[in-house]
Length: 191
Image (cartoon, rainbow, N blue to C red; front, side):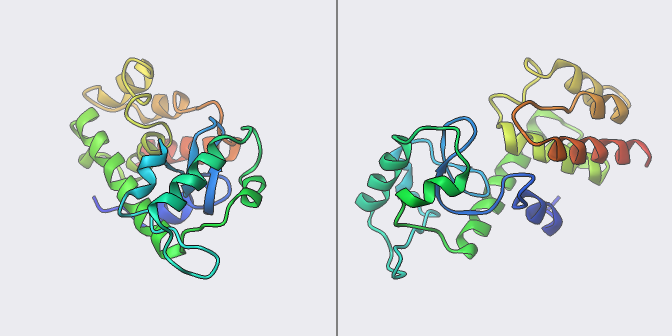
């Protein structure tokens, strides 16, 4: 399954990951950019996809990107993304955010195919709900060990999408996002 454009747009919406052009600290205190792209350390700013530019549109050096990462990393967590803009001089262009988001979504989908062998045969709404969960939590947290009831519902001989809907609630995200993802599983149950 390719990633539907509607999924990419929903992920960039304010109720999901948002669409932030500068580095900021996410709700977990992690340096992030774009639509929820984690930058785990200063060295990772040198990744090919992170084409940061300065206010004049000039390509930022690796040293400048690392310095900005350190500046953001040293800030207090718990603020909105807009708060961190005052500490930045670099940003990504929308086209780069879109490329990064697509790559991140494709990586998340690969993890889903490993965790759920029948993933490609699931109804589209279920795949979208699962993709959001994997994208949001990552493969270290969206596991059978952490989500046993959800995984049991989905990996049963006949997936129970109603049970999956009831088990899809996550802490630390908007109630709107939780509601939308829950509804995706309920839509799958009705198919």
